[in-house]
Image (cartoon, rainbow, N blue to C red):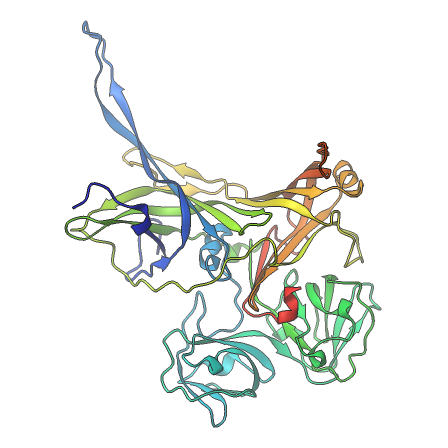
Length: 507
């Protein structure tokens, strides 16, 4: 047995609890990729005895309290944090149809046949329909993966119009998920008659697609036939309202122009939505146990746990010429240590799915801080470039403590607080005026890499600071603080996770 333990042999996983402090019968310990840790563990408080006595000496004290908490820094990746972020927003991911849902029951894909380009399952594939765009993932043969257009679907089969290869026994995590829709030729057009641009449909009913106001979609595919001729009518757009024959937008990627659509077989791409919910029935607190392994003693693996861990604070750090990183912190009711004889806690431990980190140089597809004006969907940004940005989320937790409890027995959640800080290159006084006038402002940004992406949206914010920083031989910069508030769609922060985006979305 050695005298030290190298930090490089540690590992971090988390499992969702059935109730605070209590794991389910068979927990799933999902892997994480920490770059560093912040005060992970429990801090005991003791109180010495100091009776009045002629020796004027204290006597050995007693343990009186425990504060358990922990945090870590991790790179932002496409798939690395979505499951855990549900806990920070006290909500469940609004996931589009998938055979491997985050919070539901898996539909096992039993095989792929090349004769009819068919994916098969015992049942459950009726969640898909003709003209859906699906992302096939984790199949052994690369030709069975990627974006697929559905020709037809039943409860047991999905037929696509691209070539597949026979695969009699796909891996257990092979999946199909809906990532969009391809419309028939000439069905879609752009109208600007209502004041806000609309995607008007002569067939199909978008109210059945699972979209909601405040959600973002991406208009247009890589092929010219699958997107509008004018670039301003394509790209990321935010949904203002949905009706049986149209989708109306309040944010666009350009100044929309009326377009009849001609013979376009327009492709629309959408993703999964995670936001702080305004409906009480949809607000759900999740608690976790975080497991950090600490190498091995003479018998087995040593470990420590944060128990009854409630997501407390999150920050997203964006710096120039760097990776995007996230800092996640938790407050817990207790912590535990286990030696090699006791071993780690029981449960399944899936392997880590590798996903590249987003960088700040080439992966930003969109970033926009602008004033909100009725009817203006593509306003001028308040700045063209920024040097750094930090997005913060706080649940303002406080531990509930009681007599006969070491540590806490629960956590009380305070105000859901979202903010940001931005340092931008100054070009015009519009941003300073927006601060002084307490203008309604909105911030959104998207990162896209490898045909997938994430979009963060703060629909309504107010600006603070705004004092210009003038230094000799340097460009003038403008530091801004941002406080987010509930927007018209009922949320303060929304994350759109796009499992698939066309290559043109990378900008």
